[in-house]
Image 1 (cartoon, helix red, strand yellow):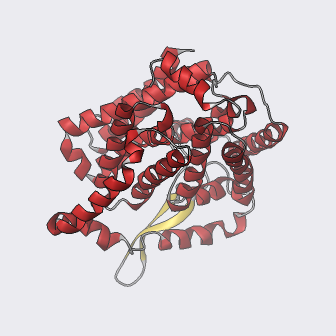
Image 2 (tube, helix red, strand yellow):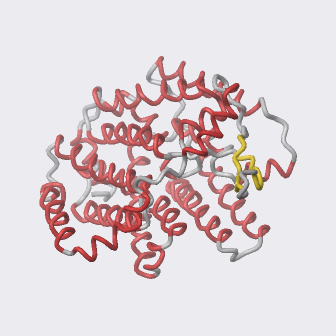
Amino acid sequence: MDKTAIFFLVTSISSLTAWNLLEYFKEFDANTIFAFRFISICFFLYSSYKLLIDFKFESKYFKNIFYLFILYECITVIRVWPFSFDELINLFQAPYIFWPFVIPLFVFFDKRIPTLLLLTKWIYRLGLFFLLLVVVYPSLLLDRILAQNVIATFAYGCGFLLLIANYLSNKKVNISFLVIFLGAISLTYLARRNGMFTLGAFIISGYFLNALNKSRTAFFRVFPLIIGIGVLLFFIFDNFSSALTKELEQRITKDSRSEIFKMYFLEINNFMVFGKGMNGTYYFPSGVNDDGSIIDVDERNVVENGYLQLMLSGGIVHIVLFLLVMLPAAINGIFKSSNQFTKACSVMILLWLLDMIIFGLPGLSLHYVLVWICVGICYKPSIRNKKDHELKAKFRKLDLI
């Protein structure tokens, strides 16, 4: 178990959000931001080299379909090569273009139980850091850019902890819920619909998964009461509830993507089967004059939908291969598992597949890394067949309960 590598993995990915925010608020010049990102990426690559060590396939189906998927992704990358030095630098910094083709390799993540449990410990520490940020800078929860980035970076991982609450102490479960709850309140106030769905899905899935496994965690025993009190208070304090949902009520039915999708499908119509390559783009007007003429046209390489992003780079074939890897993993974890940890991994995969419908862009994020680690776990009968009491003993031994 490489404790240093786990630390570098979690902190290097998380730090990228900090550099993005510094760039957004123009705190440093472009060269300095690039230097920060370069250091983070170096630590990420180092930790990946140390942790991607489990190359043993326990499923012939997975071995064949995953190598086919990776081969197709390699072709998708190579078909638009070469790039100039400046283009390579841009790809290196963009989280949604090059890195989604690298992150699937995390199915080879070290799956020894101590390593997996140590990863959950660092996820919990990210949640604690998020609470510290909220205490020191409470205003970050009221800013759309800050909140979305910080919550996605530091809070989403606690959703996985709710799914495995059966193995954790009441304290850790309560704090994980507090992190998710604060994130959900913030994103509701800011009307960030995709983030609300993600956090809400974690809470609901965590409750039902632990209820089905008869979790003795105190939080989930009183969860229906908490929800009932919350709903009651929501209606009693009308001024508070109106302020909380004012922005959401204005945006809930607002169609902010149909024009993007319309232009996207016009552009990709002739490329739907195999896509346009890793750096595929489509045109979208950035403004329209009063007479209807286009002010400017942007060549975009990001679509606000995970499946359409896969299609842009690799077409329908890309989506099909992606699902042929993901769906059987989730099915194995749910129906062919003897422990809640693997079931939680399968739920993590299914929630990501749903999230991609709303937004869910594959990219360099801890959330997406966790999804692919979960895929690798769900294809491992040696992990799926372990009993809950065995895993709980491991948690206790590493002081993770």
